[in-house]
Image (cartoon, one colour):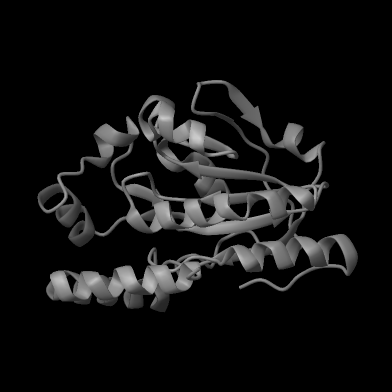
Amino acid sequence: MKTLKEQTEAKIAAGRQANPDFMNGVDAIIENAKAFQQGADAIKIGEKAPNFELPNGEGKMVALESLLEKGPVVVTFYRGDWCPYCNLQLRALQARLSEIQALGATLVAISPQVPDGSMTETEISKLEFTVLSDQDAKVASQYGVAWEVPEFLLDHMRVDRNLDLQKINHGNGTILPIPATFVLGPDGIVQWNYVNVDYRTRSEPDEVIAALRLRSGAGVAQGR
């Protein structure tokens, strides 16, 4: 089975072939964002993660502090179910969920989409982890991973993909989370993290599992 990195690289390559001008524009935006160190404000290893209380796909409120009472929590921020790279990541995490849970951890995925628009009932039933709605990316901002989407990408979404983020998210249509993953200990302290402003690149499930194993047996893992 291909790794998540191999799957995303294949999708990027296909995108370059189908729409090279757009992909080159994305490359330029990402490089500019990196130059300004966007994502540098993300909560760091050793810091306390902000608590949150967000609705799940059924509209029921879920609090981080309640999840931490059960053990470590893996929090991953994604852009939305309309993002193909996000879908690859969520499927890859679902495939390794039993290993994550065997280490006593709870997996939570957060996006700005509203509960009634994030996923269909069938899609929700296929995911065995919690999907939460962070309208206006307020929690993403607290975690330091909210990103003002450049107009170039917004135009592409509206014109080429017929995506209206304001309608999809029922709120702010210009703010999305930087794809990021945090492994939190039961005390809410960040044990490991992965933050990358390039939305086409994600942490591997193997890395998350390794961080959980290290947390349970040999101290704090080193993130990115």
